[in-house]
Length: 313
Image 1 (cartoon, rainbow, N blue to C red):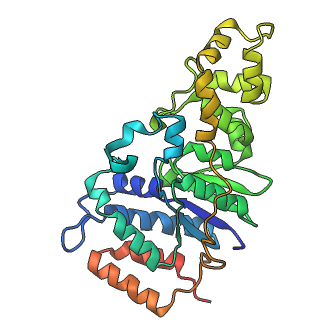
Image 2 (image 1 turned 90 degrees about the horizontal axis):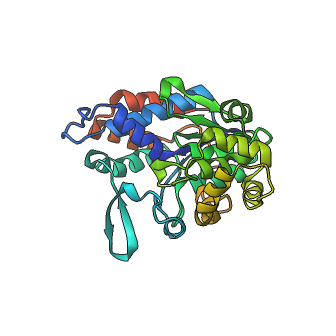
């Protein structure tokens, strides 16, 4: 792939679409389609505004990978709806959204947008891998702060951050991270490890918030340097902070691997060369899209997506 690559954190977007569009938006048979329509509208807006040449929908083949859980058992534990045989957890997802996920995949496929996941890995890891392999600029679309670790002005990787909504998208670059957190992208994993994240079940280091984490990184460079200073009774670090790091020692040994996204997955050649390139949709694709529009009442959302994604030569 060449040109500007856009990588979608797909679940992040369809959850936001589901909660942002009323579930009274239904297909002719009464089935909910609010997440489908909302996602299509998001994609249309993103493609129109940022003009990628390539687009990939990255997928959570495992939303709570067991290798991450083995390191930190609390990882995403509060989101588990039930545990089934074989140790596979079921994520707590609204039933009206669950019903729409197969249709979301069908619609993305009809538009020629490759869906790429990896066994026992999250979409974040797929995004990290594809961003690392890209030969041109990359836009990562997500509402997940953990992906700020991928930002790199040198390789033109930036994050289009959706947490404040589509009308207030934030472009995250090296400069933005420096201004917002006082750290560089390469320090973000260590920053996130210390701060913790209740939404992911990561406890962090008790008593260490963003301000203290930033100060420690400025003073010591990285987490390894901070730990060395914490273990040195002669360092200028306060006894109280040293004690906090001593208590968190077991967590700190494993948490960086949990927070850091994988960048070297074997994706089995997916997406295929040129597969994700946006261009003219074939007559067969247009017919399939039209059929989905009529069956599911996707109306204007399909029209807007077609205007953005169908690019005849």
